[in-house]
Length: 100
Image (cartoon, rainbow, N blue to C red; front, side, top):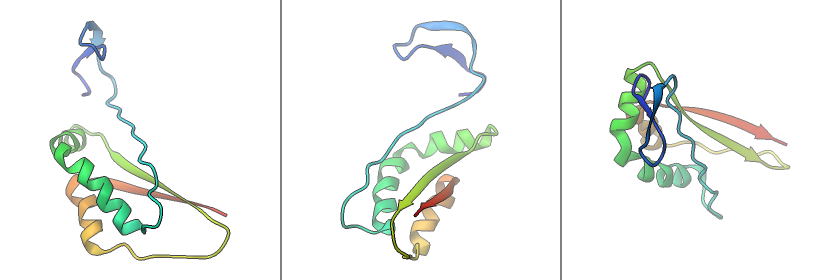
């Protein structure tokens, strides 16, 4: 986390402190499910790490799910309030990008 002693992934101590906290992960699309089911799947994986997200935000950081939609025709869907509640609970922003 920001301000913590720098370490390698194997735990070797490095000089200085972390200037940033960064974590990135790609979740693969699952065929034949909609956005609600996809986000439910993602949040099942993220919820056990709730303390990390709370610490990240409380120390001035932010978290975001970047969601891309690729297609050749118009379409749409509605995110259920229960799915949106996960975003609030973990304080995760949603970024959506559409590609024609």
